[in-house]
Length: 109
Length: 112
Image (tube, rainbow over all chains, first blue to last red; front, side, top):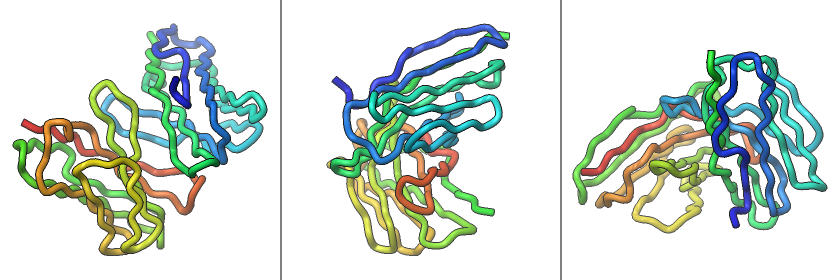
């Protein structure tokens, strides 16, 4: 079993829909990152969380440390949000960064 | 403002040839630097990270090596490439551990 699991693997939605991508992890962590990888491969760091909730524009990220779970939400989704969203955690045990396999999001116009 | 440069964008190399990918950061001092690889159909994998000049930590055993000859320069190398080295290589920097990482545009490496 992977130490970082993302769901769903693939998601197709209509423009305007509210999107939720989930990340569950099984190790103690010091931080969790959400990354966005565009079709050309470029990666942008969206959020870094260690507790609570962060918001940036239409993106919201939450983390529940007790439940070892984080969600990334996109409100009023748009075709330009189409990308792969990757969850990554830094393990408190050995300081290693562990990546989820990503969620491929496709927003239809 | 800080910028990160990674080159080349695309590289096609024969098996057994050497490799050198360069990454430089501007606008910040003593950044943490990272090399990642994303193989086709797979997730990101951290290969190396560096917290200072000459300080390199290797995350996975492989035939690649990294060097940091200057504060804002990070080089990924191989003496002899394998077919399995094909992939998308990304360099990133951060101001410290558990800080947001900023990624370069990546190098798509194809081994023939």
